[in-house]
Every structure is written in structure tokens, then in C-alpha cells.
Image (tube, rainbow, N blue to C red):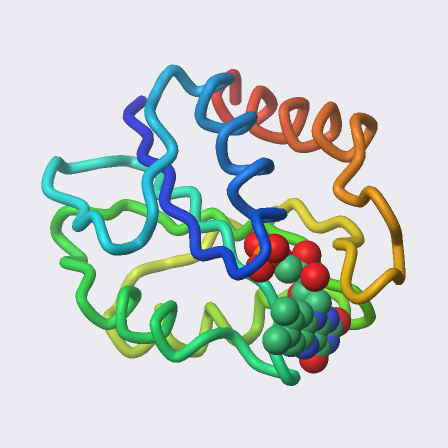
Length: 137
Ligand SMILES: Cc1cc2nc3c(=O)[nH]c(=O)nc-3n(C[C@H](O)[C@H](O)[C@H](O)COP(=O)(O)O)c2cc1C
């Protein structure tokens, strides 16, 4: 099984999750400015909500993916109020014909003093557990 990890972050929360996930998978966590060049079974994509949507850069990154190189996208991330970005990411993935793993990881993310310290150590542990469950599936 092969993996890649890409993330988009504005305040560092997704980067922290991505680094923990990537360490578990034995790969490097890279920002979405780094294209996916090698063929992978699972592309873990860390992203968040900003003003009720995923960032346009995340949309263009997904649009740039080659369906012959990416088996499935695995969504993970955090947000302050909203739940998962899964549907938003899937809408973009559908356009390029890349399936999404049905499972995902989501936790609270600090924003302007709300959910202070999140993702916290427990969130990171859960994210690692999630990555491990896919690695060992
Ligand atoms: C500019 C901005 C807009 C945001 N808008 C939302 C939002 O609409 N809904 C929500 O649940 N969280 C919102 N958040 C909170 C982020 O999703 C949350 O802080 C997340 O952990 C940020 O991840 P990052 O540090 O990797 O960018 C917003 C954060 C920022 C910085």
C-alpha cells in the first residue's frame, strides 16, 4: 500500500495533524504546493473550513490531480464550528473522477479563542489511530 500526505493550512492546525498522520504512514507531510508525482493508493488530504468553504487553493489542487495516479482521497482536518469538509472535497474529487475513502478524520480546531489548544494531544492520537487503521486495513 502506498501513501502520500498533502495539507493546506492557514494557522498551522492542519499541518500538525498532517505531520502526525504522515509519520504514522512513513511518508513526509507536504503542502499542496507540492504536486503528487508518484502513484499512490491513498492520498491523505488535510484541509479545513474557511468562511463556510474549503479554500480555493484546495479546490485547484484536487482539480490538478491525475486519476491514474491517485487511488483514493482520504479526507482529514479540523474546523471550529462546522463538521467535516468531506462533501466539499468529494464534490471536487468527483470532477476529476477520484473516489473518496468513506472514512475520514475530523476534530475541533482552534479559531479566535474558541476550542483553545485544539487539535490537542488527544486529537493527534486519534488522527494517528485513524491513519494506522487504514494502513493496516
Ligand atoms: C479565515 C478563517 C475562516 C474560518 N471560517 C470557518 C468557518 O466558516 N467554519 C468553521 O467551522 N471554522 C472556520 N474557521 C476555523 C478553522 O476551520 C479552524 O481554525 C481550523 O483548525 C484551521 O485550520 P488551519 O490552522 O490548518 O488553517 C476559520 C478559520 C479562519 C482562519
